[in-house]
Image: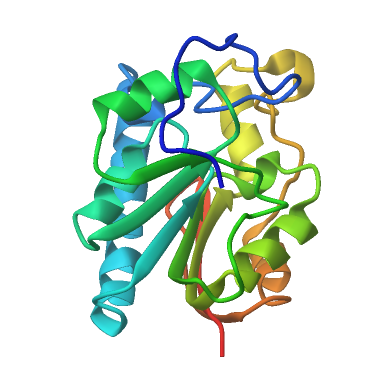
Length: 215
């Protein structure tokens, strides 16, 4: 496990060929439509977090692929012990310094540096679509969880269609840079079910949120 927020004097591209953080800053977007959809998504995500907290009010929480730390802040409003990780990137460390509170560190989703069942809740928001080995990433997240998994991904083909209609990423048929995997809601539920029992599914356009429980 690496130290919390390593020095920021490393080169910007510490993880070559991988996009870290948000390609577009949707949480602070100036586009009214994106801002509206994102707020709806966050409201539904908060609702899932509240249900999880009702069952598990205390314990360790892990966010995998935390990006700039926006979701980690929301987790910290509910749980006191939050660990948030992402791949090495100097710019992310700058964001982490602006959002203190969680225990930030660098690690790979496919090789999580924690023992089995170490966390009570594991969260991955807009992460699975970026993984080169999504099955391995899912198994690792399930391995380190003793209870809950909360995972979200873009809902396809709606997400890519919305990009095309908005004139974004037309050269790649609406595929956002860095998105390697694509799931409809049913296919994502089936995917998550490999590792844990799916308790609830939320579908705020254009995303899918799955809440699953181990054991």
